[in-house]
Every structure is written in structure tokens, then in C-alpha cells.
Length: 119
Length: 110
Image (cartoon, rainbow over all chains, first blue to last red; front, side, top):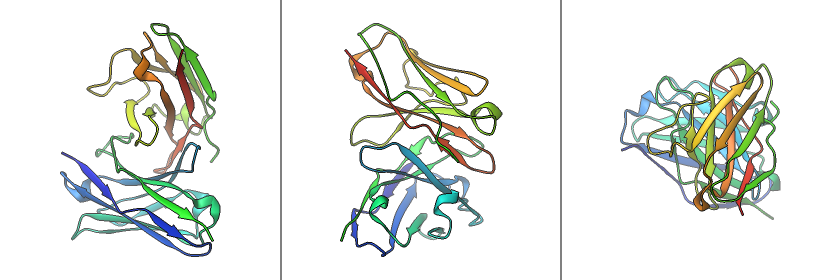
């Protein structure tokens, strides 16, 4: 069965960077596009971007351009999302979410990683 | 990309029906039949309830249904049950691999 297991909670100071991992199993890693979605406390879901694990192509939401980098390691079936120049508004739970090839919906989700930005 | 517009809350008694709207533009909801809906209970990851506007994944009760007209998609929960109390989010494909979510709707079972 498809499983997405994310790294643990992080506490960062303003201006720092955070790198969250998402390890996939139960399917061919390079076949499923991986998206990142975040949710600030008490707020809604926000789409951040997507990476194609087979070719490393990425598309980012415009508001994160210049601060976000998504990468993948095919040897460990892991994707990474790094967000830099952190500010308090980046405090959120970050989710990875995978799409079955050829589909347009998120059918598999990681458990979420809480990133807290605080001085 | 602006978030899709959803009502902040809806409520109903057990057994009643509630409908949640999700309004976008011709660049997202109106332009593609790729609207999905997610249920989220507190502290949990979202769960897919409807995809491609009106299709239900296996395991989702048939009291959940979806539709779309123009730039507005809708999720209807018929025969409301206590366990349906949760937050619901719509999501639309917006071209070039992009997605946009709605602001979320809290469903309360009275």
C-alpha cells in the first residue's frame, strides 16, 4: 500500500531555512507527482508546489517563488521541500501529497510536519 | 492565484442535507472538470471524498455527492450523520500542474 512518511516537527528562528522530507513506499517512486500543501494554525489548506520525481521538474506557487526548493532522491524514494527566509507566518503543518499517475486529485497524504517559526 | 470561495460554515440536523459551494473562475473551476473535495477532522490529514467533480472513491459513503455549474462546484451531504462534522475543502486544477484550494467550510451537525 502507498505510504508517505514525513520527517518530524521543527522549530526555527526567523530568517532560517527548513527542509522537510517525505519518504514514499508501496509504489514506483518515479511514477507519482508529489505536491506540497501547508496549513497554518486554524487556517485552510494552501498549495505550495509540485515536483516530478522522474525528471526533477518543479512548479511553484508564485507567492513562494525564490524561497522554495523541491528536490528528490530516487535512491531513497524521498522528496524534500526546503523553505528559506522563514517568518512567523510560515508556522504551519506541511503535508506532502501524491497523485496517482494521470489523475488530478490527491489520493495519498503524508502525516504532516509541524514547522514552528519563533524567535 | 486567489483561493476558491467557500462559505465559512454550514450546519444541519442529523438526516438533513447540506450543500457547500466552491466558487472560482474560468481559469480553474470553470475551465476543467478536475474539482476534488477533502474532509479533514481536527489534527488529521485531509481525506479525499470526491474527485473529478462528481466521482466517489471506494469507501466513501454514497451520501456524499458532487456537481458543477459554470465556475461553481458543490458538495452535497445527504442524510447528515454525526461523523460528518468536519472541515471540507474544495480543490481545483488551475493549469500547468497548479492547484488552488478553497478557504474551507466547517460542517456542524446540530
